[in-house]
Each structure stands twice: as C-alpha cells, then as structure tokens.
Length: 200
Length: 200
Image (tube, rainbow over all chains, first blue to last red; front, top):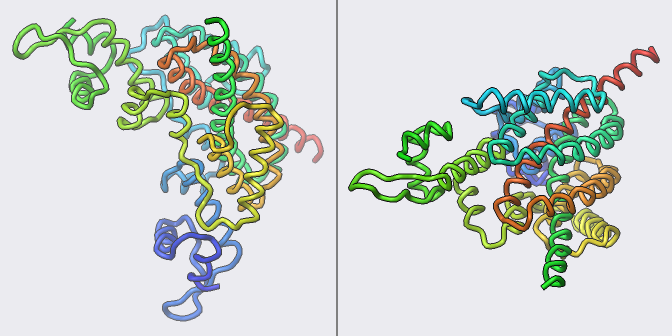
C-alpha cells in the first residue's frame, strides 16, 4: 500500500509516519520508483505498536526506539523506571529500605538479585515514603507484592516468550492497573463517605 | 530556619527552592527583614512532598501545582492519566471496550459512573489492546480488578481522609506496583526459562 493508505488504515497522519521513518521507529518501505515506496501489514502493525507505546505508555520517541531494539526487553522495561534513592539520604533510612527489599525478595522466594533495576527503584520508593514519615507504607508493599506475584505467571505465559508481546503486555498492564486502582479507590471512597455520614 | 538550612535539611538546592517559591509550590516564608525570610517544618514537609511527586511520580511542575491545589484530589489523580480512545476507532471496537468496562463495573459492584475519568482511560487501554490484536487482554483486566479492589479499602483507610496522604499513597503506590510487577515477572521469566531448558 502507499503511505496515504497506511495513514488511513492506522489513523496516523502522513507527516507523523514520515517522522517515525526518519527516527528509525518504522522500517523503510520497498521503493517502487525514485520517490515512492510501498508498505505492507508489518508496517501497519509496527505503527500501531509505536502509537500504543507513545499514547498509552506515555513513552518518548527515544524510549520507544530503545525498547524496540533491546536485546533484553525485561531489563529495558525495568530500567525505564528511574526512581532512585535520593542523594543525601541518611544511612539509617537507606539501610532500612535495602533490608526491606532484600527481605521481601527472600520472603517471596523471587529468583532475582537485590540489584535488579526494579528492586533498586522499590528501595527508592521506600526511602521516599520514610522521608515523608510513612514507613507504614511497607505494609501495603507486601499486599502489592502478593498480587503482582499472582499476575506474573499468567502475564509471562500470555506474552508467549515474544519480546513484542512482553512490551505490549507490560505497558498496557501498567496503564490498566493505574486506571483500575483509581476506579476501585473511587468505590472505596464512596463507602468511607457513607461511613462518615452514617457516624455523624 | 533560613533558606540555607531548609536546603540542607531537605537536600533540595537553594535555587530550586526559590524556583518552587516563584512557581507557587511552596508558601512564602515569614519576612524577618527586607530581603530575608524564615521557614519552618511545614515548609520542609511540603518540600519533601513536592520532591516525591516529581522524582517518584514523574509529575511536571504544573501537575504538582494542580494536585496540591485541587478541591477533589481523587478526580484530579484520575484525570492525570490521559489515555483516550484513539480518534478514528471503528464503532465495533469502541462499543466492545465500552461494554467491557460497564460490565466490569457492574460485576465488581463498584459505585462509580461509566464516565469516571479512569473508566474512560481503561476503555482507551482496551481499544488499544484490540487494535494490537490482543482482545484476550480482557482476561488479565479481571485479575487486576480483583487485586485493585482488594487493595482499595486498605489504601483509603491508610490515607485517613487526608488529601495529602491520598496523593502520596497513590503516587508512591503506582511506582511501587510498577517495580514489583517487574520483579515478579523477572522471577516468572526464570521459571519459564527453566521450563524451556528442561523441555529441550
């Protein structure tokens, strides 16, 4: 198909498609003449994937390129969450967070290292919670960990070992969970408002 | 305390503190002379909160300001996830996603409207999944919804009805769940690699 048809089918404008071609997010089409190329279903599919990562995942062009060319998609997805232990954190808080993460990994029996990028990000979240006077946040972490462990097996099987499926599943999953948490909290707020009203 | 002491205690540089003061993220200190102000623990606490939202939540200055001045923090947090049904989506896919969201809300008994901003975001995620040929993603949504409902009551109680606690809990929770999902998936990948190796 011509670029105009690719645009119509994917809902992505021709200038945006040309931009993605220049940025290397989309492979060049087959040349049919000096200034015309033809595209096929693989281009349409890749274009939908790029749009999903940008629109739903909120990823930058550079992040999409890194993900689509990564040799190890799991590590790349983990490294994209850049939450670190803030500089100047006192040793006590840092050690508390590191120990909490190590204990969580041991308790869940997770076969990952304590320097897994996401384990470091979790330590950063815990340090931040402690600095906000919310060390009790640790209790919620355990509940989240049990649920995430429960999902993970199904998620990995649904990805079928394909890097592209893993990228899609992880990014769409993040967005779905964000939405669902707020929906469930919206319901729980109704209940807590009712309780407050009832006790007044 | 003077601004230098506030900087030392919070780990935020003096120029950054002055920027936050100009941007209205931090209330002005009490004037002690024509060009000097004094700050207290409420400033230090607010500064830590602003840093957490920016560093852990990845929020922009504008988003932090909107959140900190919002009358309804829950709605604001929901509206900040701007995933929409892509323009040009065919009616069949759009109706499938809308029906799936409405059925999920009914099945869970959630007391929220189908036009809750997060319900709209979820519809956008489902449309994107369908366009990527992954309508089966719907099965995972149900598992996520059960877990999010399970968290929500504890989360809302831990927020204690305070808007600031809700902002902190939601933003730190999002970051923690992102990290924990990747940790659990890292473990599940080990298992699936072992299975592949075992069957070879």
